[in-house]
Image (cartoon, rainbow, N blue to C red; front, top):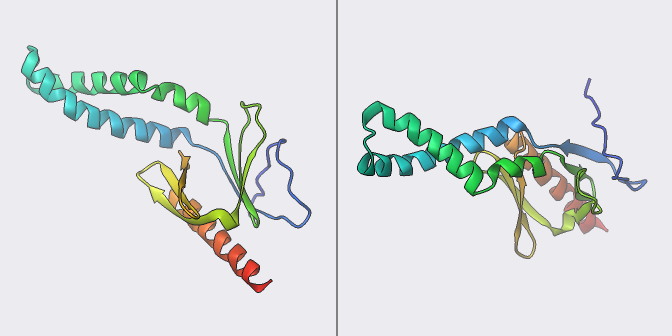
Amino acid sequence: MSQIPKLPDDIRLHPDEHLIALWRPALSVFLRKLAFVSILTAACVNPILVSFTEFRGLLAWPISLLLGAVFYAFVFDDVFEWRQRRDDHWVLTNWRILFVNLSDEAEPATMSLADCDTAKSWMWWSVRLRLQPHGAMMMPYLRDRRDVAQKINAAVTAYKASEAKT
């Protein structure tokens, strides 16, 4: 039996509106992104470390990985990004996509499915939602990116088909 997700208190659906899905960021996906970018940074740091210091061979890689992780996490504020994103909620209904961050006092952001074009998984940690007539929106750190994109695309297609009939 499928468990119905609980909506955040800030979100109220219209009487004819039906909940399709509710997504939240996953720490494991955030850590996967941090590891990927840290390794990439370490690959750039390692030649510099080997060229300008006494570290050589196997010792250079662990030091590069550590420096890469610290550099990326603190210089680009990635450590603090998780604190900002961990309370995000993305809600998909048959009419719209809603975004609310429970730690933010702003009203939930809402977008009609008529304004959406296509959704695709992006990199290993986000879903990229293309908007009409142009633009894009990122939905970061969602656990099953392909399933999220598929549900959004199906909802957009169904919404536009129902609007074309009227």
